[in-house]
Image (cartoon, rainbow, N blue to C red; front, side):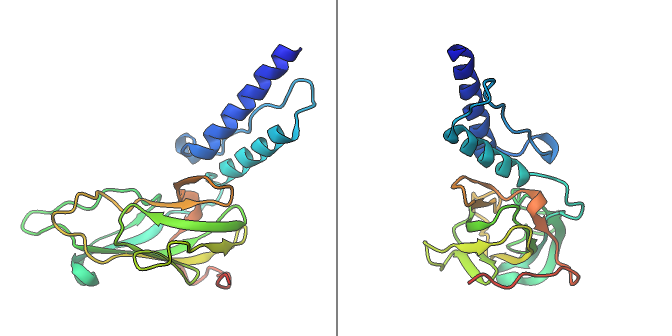
Length: 211
């Protein structure tokens, strides 16, 4: 019995770790939580890991029908000037920068707008793979020029405004995309899933900015 219980405990911890640190399951579907001990007496540590795994899976859920990503606009020149060369919905934000088209150079700046709706309450930190990008969530700034210790408290299931700006992607830049990620309340860092990102809409009931 000890061997069986030990195996179940190892399997539970492994599955929980994969859910916490890995990406969403194929298609963004909600992943199942790990097994409990066959003896029915899983210890507190196991229960904690299972709870975290369940929360991690919920953040990858596609049950929100309108979670389609943020509205991305790619501008002709630096500083969001000139014509909008590309406009599209992006989620998660890890798509490649639009390539140059015949007779024109690639866009030089970009802006993303919309709402973020976390599935779990707590303190979040937002990150970008591009160090010059600026991220603003519920009035709190992250990224370029922001306090390195910045964080924002978000409530479960509430909509919060998010704005991301990349003022100048030089033609020689080797950075392929923005790659928006967050450090969630349980401490794991990963891409903000599409299920948490919504395009701009005047009909969304917006939460008050976090204090």
